[in-house]
Figure 1 (cartoon, rainbow over the protein chains, first blue to last red):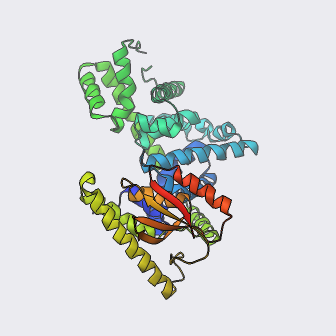
Figure 2: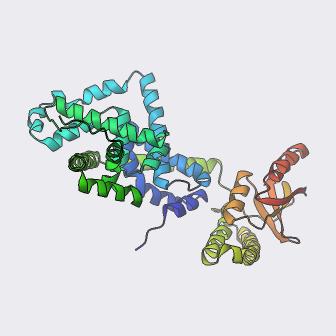
Length: 186
Length: 224
C-alpha cells in the first residue's frame, strides 16, 4: 500500500483538512518530539513545543513551497521553537547547562557498571555533548539529513555542517577518552 | 593515538563518512567514499567508529519515548479555537485545484495548457453552481459558498494562461478573496474581496497590489 506523499498532505492541510493534519502528526510527532527533547532536555516543555510546531504547520501550510522535504521543514520549525523555549527557560533562571549538569551521569550509581559497557558509555558521552553538537549528530545519524538539509535546518553553510560534525565527533572522542575509552582518533 | 592524515583528499572523504554511514550521500560522493574505503585502512577504521556512533545515536533517541496524548489534544484544541474565531475561506476552490493537479499530472503541460484551462473553466463554473446549490440546502458546517451576493466589495480578474491551480489558489488566499462567478466573457472571474463594502481607496489599493502580480493575473479591475 502506498501512503499519501507528505506534500499532498500539506496541500490538504492548507485547505483546512484536519484528517490530513492528523496523518501528518501521526507520521512525524515522535521524531520531532525526540529532536526537541534532545535540544532542550525537558519532556514537558518538548510536548508544548511540538504542539506549537504542528500549529504552525496548520497556519503556514499554504506557504510551503516544497523547496525542501516536509520533514526538513518540520525540523527547522521545531528547532526555532526549541531555541525560543530555551531562551524563555533561561530568562526564568533554568539555565540549560544547569539542567545538563543535573543529568550528568557521572555520579550515577550505575556508572561503574556502565563503564564496562562500551555502548552504554558511548550513549552517555553522546548525551553529554553540547546542544550544538548533539543537534548535528542527531540530524545526521538519527534524522538521516543530508549535508544540504542539515544546513537548511540549522541555518548554516554546508561546509560549516561538515566542520561542526567533525568537531562534534572529536569532542565525543575526548569525552570517551576521559572515561577511559581510547578510540585512537583524532 | 594515530597521527592525523593530512592528505586533503583523505580529510574530505573522512568528513563525508557520517553521511555515507547514514545513506544520505549523493551517488557520486558515495562512490568516492567506497573507492577510498577499499584502499585506505585508516579510513576504514574511521568508518567503523562512525558506524558505532550512528548505532548508539539511534539507540539513544529511540529510548526517549514519545509525547503523551496531551500534546495532540492541545494542538487540536488550538486548531478548533482558531477555526471558531476565523474559519478558512476558499475551501470549495480546492476541488478545482485538485482536479487541475490531476489533469496536469496526466498531460504534458505545454500541450495541455489550453485544454486544461478550458476544463478548469468548466469545473470552476460547476463548483460555483454546486456551491450555490449547497448553500441553498443550508449546510451549516461548510464555509460560506459564493452565490454572487450584492453586498461586499468585488473585482473581476483574468488569470494569465500559464497560471497553475496552485498559483490561483495561493493568489486568492493571499487576498482572502473567493470566486463568486465565472468564467465570464473573456475568461474573467468575478471575485469577492470582502464580505463588507470596503472604502473606495482600500479597494483601489488592493487592486493595485493585485495588478503588480503580473505573473498570475493579466487583468484586474474593481466592480460592483
